[in-house]
Image 1 (tube, rainbow over the protein chains, first blue to last red):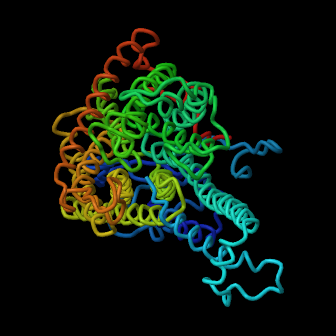
Image 2: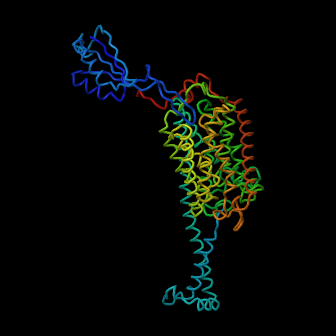
Length: 112
Length: 486
């Protein structure tokens, strides 16, 4: 099992979600987050005072996947989240030791 | 302040019609229009009984006309009073509420709301009397303390066609919003207890005397009730905006900067709230300015139009200045400009025509833009929400320009045919305006400084730094504006 975390542009979220549903991803957790990588922020001016806003709004997707699905999911996100501009975000993968469904205590990939 | 000419001539016409018709009463009714006036007059002098009848009829008619005019004026004035209250809550509360950081939203709104209640009670006890009772040069007396003698009868010194009760409650709404404006300068760092005590004292020591001096009978600056330096202030340029704006500057200097200002970013947390607030202020201002005609006649129309035009020109002027300087016209700039224009047109509203109103608005828009962007940064004081930059500066500009543009064709306040403002041929009025402005500045500067010292000793003014960091909503009021988890 692998955990996949992807930080993407809010404007790409809907197409990423649709593309993932098409390839059979059944569940995900989504959060609105703020952050920045190498992308520069922008300035805002309120009554003459300038503020640099460097934490920009992003969407963070989290899902735990059976090993067989990981590569397809990564490809799908790469394709559907890309705008080609700086600020498109990143994907992080990490190994997950165990998953347990709370309702019936199933374990492992069955619990996903 | 109003002309009763229309009423008199109406009475005259109705009276002559009655004179013409009365002797024919009892005869099979010929039409009023065909009655022969000379015959009627002859009959009138021959028979005393119908004359008495005519006098009675006339008195009755006079009564009815008075009642009709009173009803019309009273309806407008009650609506105006409600509009002015709407300027404080929700207008100003939303405008300021959106400009602070989210952790201080309820605190700033609560200050406006608390004043709605606090000043109302003070007004009932002594406030109205200190402003409009008695006829001293500086402050009123206790003639109307506890609203003694304030009832259905008009007070002919101020508003001869509406119940004094209406005049009283209308003027109250001005007393409510004025101290509320100051909270824009003390925002995000002043204790609630200190705010309450300071505002009560400020209302008694600064507002009441200024209101009496400018609007009260025998007041030093009164334009129409025997003032030594007749200052034109139609709806509160000196009394409301200079007094609150200059006091706001003193408060900002005395309290010191917010922790982290100007290093740390403190952008408005919701310009949507501010936007709604500013639009409510604009609408409410019709009650503030057009209502200050104290009647529903043509002067109210004139003030209504001047108010609207001033606001529009100022919104455009501020936006244009911003567009040139920053390359963009912001929503905050447009609404701030409108408020600056409304402030500046306040003293002028019932004295100037629509074209001067556009000029006053445009000048105020550009000047107030420079005040909040350049002057504030140059001097480094932390007038958090620009109460001084908009109300102090806008009020001063408006008061002086009123002296330039006031016209007797709009409002013959010094008597029919007598020039009012500079362009009318009476440049001395600009000097009078200057005296009014200086008195208001001096009163606000000295009064506020002394009161801040006193309140500082009694309750303290600033919250501790850790409370400022945590936000005034939680530390002063024990609640939060936005509970997103619930």
